[in-house]
Length: 452
Image 1: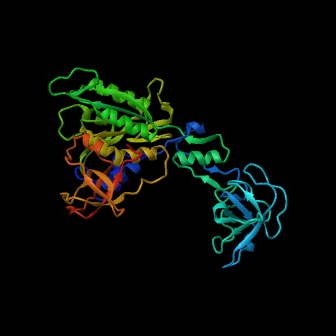
Image 2: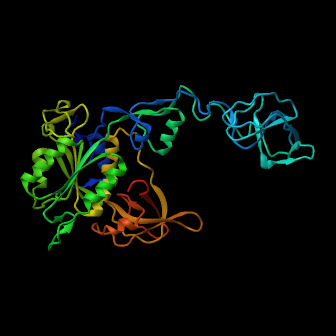
Image 3: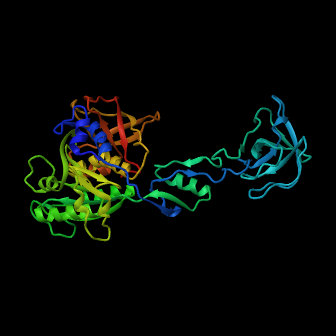
């Protein structure tokens, strides 16, 4: 596994004091590695997990030709352009769950329900509402309302037996869970959950329940990070608030390294801050400190903690035998303790998590799905923007009368205005080289739905 310096050397124009936001994800892709241990879980426990093995369909879905509508099944070869078709229903109604027995001759049809097996020799279904009842019990189909094969689901048209139904690396969302169930499978093989420890740092941080004091603020970052991690489906390890004291910080980092694959801190990573967090990160690991050309969220630290810190006991401790530290390079059979040092301001924490940490953790989870595409929306207001940095502004996306998406900011974009994240439903992404935005300009939006 490459060191931080080796990864940095591979990035063209790498400048830790003015790093482009677009280069951060490239760096993190090379820093983190997927976990390798797998486990078999029941389908009710599989939501949000990542497949570690292809799911091959043991059956065809559907297992037979069947009707997609309530109506009448018949041989579609009898349809003639411009001509009505009159048919005589025969036999009993074909219901789902049982094969229909009997024969159907030319000029005849079978009443059929949705999901019922198509009787032999029949390939078309006319919906009941497209027919007219004749006095003698026949049905009439108006000209040119059907084509041969309409309203018939073909055997295996969803999935064919022996084909890959879901690929390794797939994040199991509700639709995928339903697909697994449609194959009759009770379990799936998934990667183990990624363990993420997090804590807030700083003497000015109050935990809930503590009395207010001058100059102190209640910690919100732990709770927003908890929500973001829980939505992501990782195993969350909350280490609380850690005071700015070397012994306490070292103990927190050592415990986190022993129990977690990834560590997230908030606060204490700005250049020149008079605290011990940066010092302790450098002392215990291979860490880079960045000033990213972005707003909000300029300061950030990334790296790995030394593997020998993981040789700790505890209910969540990882086996130290999978790791070794040689010549400054961390080697791991199942990943190392990756460190993400986020800024202290609440909005900056959320933005850097969404832009950088979440994609990196998805990679650690073994997920191969790329990030969701940015939506394009029309800005309803002017936005000031300097080229040379990426800006993430909190936005509210709505649908205009003509059906197009439009977006406006939530007002005050200060990195401490957490209420603006509550009001927003997405981040307006103003890219590195982009300048001022005028009303009517198209902008990119990273939507929140399903993420935060």
